[in-house]
Structures are given as C-alpha cells and as structure tokens.
Amino acid sequence: MKEKLQEVVDGITIKYHANGKTIWSKGKIEEGKAEGYWEWYRIDGTIKRSGYFANGEPTGEWTTYDDKGNLIK
Image: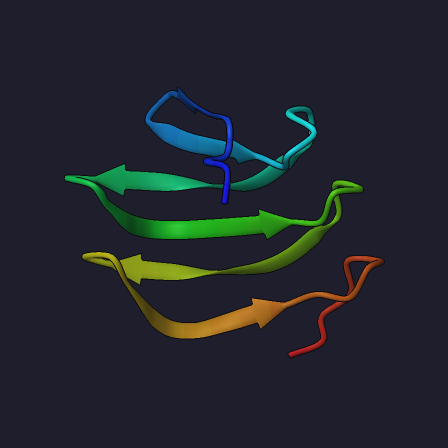
C-alpha cells in the first residue's frame, strides 16, 4: 500500500487520501505514536470517526458518524 501524503501543521499531523487533496486523518504524533484526539474523514470531506489515543493505543469511547456527519455510535 502506498504511503499517504502527509504534513505537520502547528504540531498536528494531517494525512491525505490517495487523491492528495482531501484529508484522511488528523491528530498529534509524539515519539512516533498517535496521541490525544484524532479524526478520520471520508474522501468527500465528511467526518467518519473520532477518538483518543494514549501512547499509540486507542482509549475511551470512540465516535462513528454517518455520511451526513450524524452520530451513529
């Protein structure tokens, strides 16, 4: 699988879909591991999922959204 295009803006890592234009995910990476709040997006730009990481591991409750941005679970 091809590595996603990414950039770091104000300490937040932003990864892009294969088209290189729309955001796939964004959140902090500390010492090579996901940390704190993260969000993932569909190719159309709507939010898909969000949640928190601690030391690279998912923690707490995660939220999933439908294609209109409404809460699913």
